[in-house]
Image 1 (cartoon, rainbow, N blue to C red):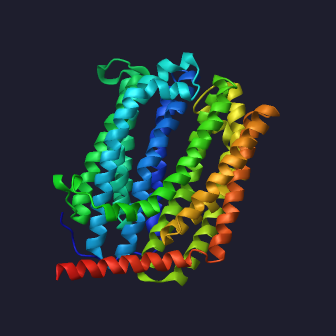
Image 2: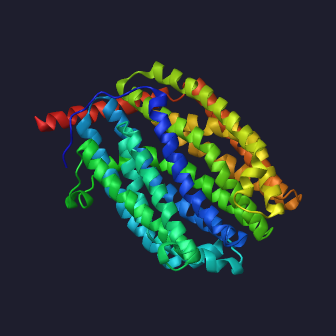
Image 3: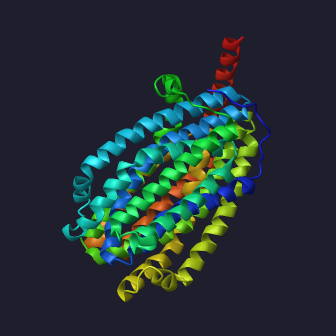
Length: 464
C-alpha cells in the first residue's frame, strides 16, 4: 500500500454536493432504465423486478455500512492532517467489503427463489423475478467494491470521479439493455434475463474504472496481503459509525419490505403502482441525499479539525437549502405526475394510482430532508447510535402498524401506506433536528477528534 501526500481540500458545499447529486441520480437511473425497458414486456414484469430490486437494495445497505463508516473515519483523519491513517482505513474498508460481497453473492445466487417466496411474490411473477435476482444478486460482490471505493474517493473530495463513472455505467447499461431486450445488432431478444445480464456488464465496467481511479487519484494500491491481514482495531472504528448507520438503513428497508408484503395482498397492479412510484420518488430524494452526503463530508473534516461551531452552522445552512429544494422538486413532480408515469406504462388505472401517490409525496419529502441531512451530520460527528434507536422505534411501532391499520384493516390501500410513511418521516425528522439544535452531538464530536489525533500521534511515534 502506498499513498500520496495530503493536498488542500475544497470546503464549499455545492462544489462537493453537485457531483454527488448527479452520481446518485445516475445510480437511480440505472434501475429506472431497467424498469422502463421491462415495462415493454408487461406491468407484471415490472412488479416482479420491483420486488427483486428491494432484495438487492437490502444487501446494498449491508455493504453501505462499511462505506459509510469508512468515509466518516477517513474525513476525521484528513481533517486532522493524518493521510497515512486515512489510507489504512480505506484499505481495511475495501478489503472487508469485498469479502462480504463474495459471501452475499453466493447466498443470493443459491437462494433467490426462497427469498422471493418470502416476499409473497405471486407465483405467476416468479419466472420474471428469479433469473433477474439470481444474476443481479449473484454479482453483488462487484457492487460491494464499487461502494467502498466510491466512498474513499468522496472522502478525499474526488466526487466528480464517482459521478463520471456512474455516467459511463448508465450509458453502457442503456445500450446493453436495448441490445438484449430488442435484439439490436443481431443479438437474440432475451427479455428480463437480458436486462439482468446488461446490468451486470455495466456494473463490471464501473468496478474496473473505479479501481483505476482509486490508484490514479489517491495512489492507494492494495496488495493481496491487504485482503488477508485486516486490522481488527480499524474494523472496530469503521463499525462504530457504520453498524448503527446500517441498522437504521436496514430497519427502514425491512420495514418497507413488510409494507410491500402488505401491498402484495392487494395484487399485482398495486405492486406495479408502488414500483413505478418508488422509481420516480427516488429521483426526488436524490436532492436530499446529495446534500446529506456533501454535508457529512464537510462536517467530518470540520470535526477532525476541531471546528465544532462551524460544523453546527453548516448543518443548519444545508438543511434550509435542502428543505427548499425538496419541496420544489416534489411539487414539480406532483404537477407532472400523470405525464411522468405515462412514460413507463399506458395502463390508465396504474397511471392514476401512481400519480396520486406522487402527489402525496409532497407531504413526505420535506420530512425526509430532516432525516437524511441531519442523520448524516450526526453520523459525521460520531453520534451514530441515536438515529438507529429512534428509527427502529418509529418504523416498527408507528410506520408498520399504521400501514397495516390504514392500508389493510381500514381499507385505504396504497394511500394508507403512503400516509403512514409520511407520519414516520416527519416524526423522526423532528426528533433528529431537536438533537442537533441542543448540541447533544458535541461530546461525540470531541471524542472522534481525540481518537483521530491519538492514532495519528501513535502512528508517527511508531514510524519514528
